[in-house]
Length: 363
Image (tube, rainbow, N blue to C red):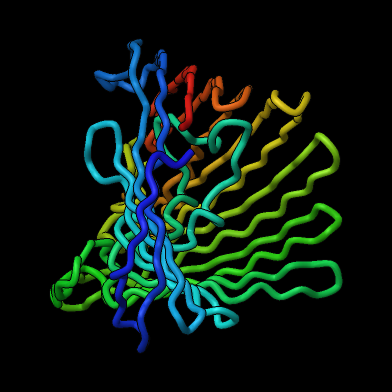
């Protein structure tokens, strides 16, 4: 609920000529408790452990309408550590769509970077996150996102999303000027979602970022693309997704199959596929099962990008997640068990398992 609403009569904007009408400011948030256990044999000091924790957030938002019919909204959220989690400003221009920009706001990538289960995505809490999460990695900060007005056709709703960043380094500029020697030049994003009355939803998105040749050598431009399909029928919903990511790293030699790798630094390409099945037992209780396989292909051969003249074997990280969610008014209880094999795209990387139970209270 809103804790406090304040009428603002001095909300001004330089985006268009004209003044703004009164706006409303609201404060909302949630409080939570968590219990987590994890085990593993990856060699990390954090493989094994357990503990209690808190998970709460506080958010401030405001919105108002200008005298030309456009509306402006802004929101800032804070973590339980007291630091800012995300902040964004949106301008909705009537039938011309919506522009949005901010700090760690994700652009439109959240609609295309993974499939959600009853609680979270399949790689939440995993020893290695899915490569499909790279979607939007150049657009969290220092970018602008545009959502076109929805189009209705033949029982379907079509939504187009676009994004652009002058420099794709994911740096919050706060009115400043981007560093001309940064790793990336401009970055672009495009996505489309089609939702049909039958319960079928399709989505596809792609992003690319130019390498800044001043600071990057032996590298090429970044490209990432994801597509998904979900279908809901009564209490059952299923989803399938595929992703392709090439971070543009070109090294003198490809890493061996039995070595740790990161999405940001490894050469070659990453391809993943994931599926999720969810069932609503009743209006309050839902369960889900999800699995994902994320494969690293070093693209190694007998000449360039090779190790001792032989092809480097592909390595697949495997994720599995069972989740449960129960809600009763403003209270919720959610839980998952997440398992990861071949952590770090390493054939000798071992396994990691995490269990979490969370009690949430919203206000």
